[in-house]
Length: 124
Image (tube, rainbow, N blue to C red; front, side, top):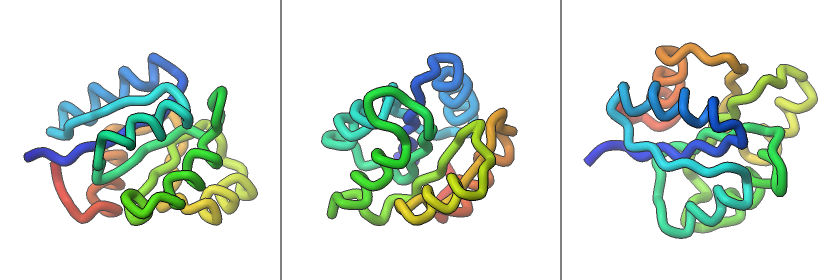
């Protein structure tokens, strides 16, 4: 069974790029358009890693991460933030919310897959 990754990003282009990079690496990918949708997807999925944007409508990445960390079922799932933001204060806020790592867009698919392997301990 392949490793499942949940990607949460309001940009269709970014979701498509993540889908391509991650499926090419052998991962099963489920997607959400924002934090609210991400929490809905998590009701029926048990991903091994979550990748989320920060700036999204309805619920931003910070709120999404905080909500995931409140869930017994998903509390320990590694969460990588993938964003255009590089501000140290926002990185610190994401870490305090429960993020495992931070990757700045545009992403390098090889580095992204390496980061997923590092935080999850599993290959695709």
